[in-house]
Amino acid sequence: MKNFDPTNATQSLAMVEFSTTGFEQGINFKRQKILLKNLEPKSFAIKDFEGNKDDQEHYIANTMATYKKNLTDRSERQLGDPFIDSNYGIHSRPFEVGVLDWFVEFMKIEKNEYWGYITSGGTESNHHSILTERKMFPNGILYALKESHYFIAKAIDMFRMKWVPVETLVSGEIDYCDFKTKLLTNKEFSAIVVANIGLKTMKGAVDDIDLIIQTLKESGFSQNGFYIHCNGALSGIILPFMNCEKKVISFKKPIGSASMSGHKFIGCLITCGILIIRKDYINFHSRNIEYIVSRDATIMGSWNGHASIFLWQALDKGGYKWFQKQVEECLKNARYLKECLSKARIRAMLNEGSIIVVFEQPKDEEFIRKWLLACQGNTSHVLVMPHVSIEMLNTCLDELIAKCLAWYKDESILPPCLEVDIGKENCACALHKC
Image 1 (cartoon, rainbow, N blue to C red):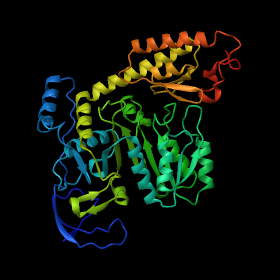
Image 2 (image 1 turned 135 degrees about the horizontal axis):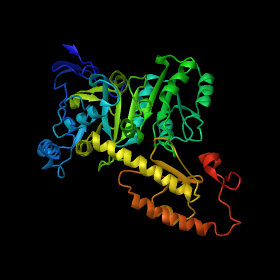
Image 3 (image 1 turned 180 degrees about the vertical axis):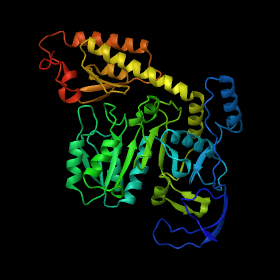
Image 4 (image 1 turned 90 degrees about the horizontal axis):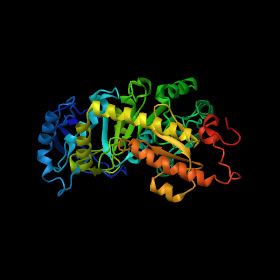
C-alpha cells in the first residue's frame, strides 16, 4: 500500500496507511489501512456575475439550499483538513475551499500549490504561520515591529521564540535601515519576518515586501534562510482593488504565508480570518489522525463551519466590481476626513492608499467611547469602512471641532507636540506651526 503523502492532494481514491505517534511522544499505535475518498476537494466557486443580480441571487440560493434549512439549528464544524475528506459528515468544506480559491486568485499562487483554512480571526491565522515558521526554523529569530499588534507578544510567549523588535518610520512602516542593522547582528540565525499590510499598526502602514526581501538578501540571507509572513488583516483585501500591483500580496515573491480578516472590510457576520500558506510548508505543522480519517493541520483541530458559509455568501453577493467600488469610496472618504481635520487645525495624517486616519487624541472619554475610537499615546484613529458615510463623518467632525474649541479656549493650554507620532509636517503644534 502507498504511504500517505500530505502534500499530494490530487489523488482521487487512494489506499493509505496511517501511523499516529501520540502527539510525538513516541507511543506506537497499531497501523491501520484507511480508505481516503475525495482527496480532490469539492468547491463551491465564488462567481462574478458582473451586475446580473438575478443570476447572482439564483446561484447563491441554489448553492445555499441544502444548508440554509438547518443553518441555525445544527453545528457546522470543520475537522482535520479542509482539502481532505473525513468521516465527519456535518461540515461546510465546499464553501471553505471556494472562499480560499477566491483569495488565491489575486495572490498569484496556483490552486495546487497552496493550503489554507478559515480561522477564528487574524490572531489564529498569524499564530498558525508563526508556529509553522518556528518548526521550520527552530533557532530562528522573529523580526517584527515594535508597534506590532499584541498577537506578536502572545506568539513569543506561547512558542518560546526570540523576538528582535524593529523600529518604525513615522508612517508606521518598518524602518529598513534598523531592520538591516539587526539582521547583520544575528546573521547566524534564520530570519522569521512578520510584514504588516495595513491595520496591525496604529497608522495602517503597508510594509514594502520587495524592500524587505532586498534587505534580507543584502544582509547575506539566502531564500532558504528566511520566512516572510504577510499580515494583511485590513489592507490585504483592499490593495488588489487599487491598481497598486507592487503592494499586493503575491506568492510570486518568496513569501511563505499570508493572512486577512473576513469580518473587517468584507463584513462577514461571523468573526473569522483567512490563512493562505504554501502547501509544502504545512507538513511542518500536521499529522495524520486515524480517528477522523484525515490530517490534523490546524491550531484548533476543529473550527467554525458557519463562518465559511457566511464568508462565501458575503463574497459572492459582492463581486469584483462591488469591492472595487467600495474601496474607491472608502479611500475618497478617508481623504475627505483628513482634509476636514486639517482645515479645522486638528492635527492628522493619512498614509497613501490607506483608509485609516490618525489624529490628535480627543480629551473627552465620552466622545472616544461614543465614536469607538482606538487610542494610543497622543493619537486616535478612525477606520473609514464601507458603512461610514460622509454624513456620519460630518456629524463626528462637527462634534469634535466644537469640543476642541472648548478644550483650548484657554490659550495657556497648548495641544501636545505630535512630531514623533504623525511627523513634523502634520503636527502644527506651537513649535511646528506653519
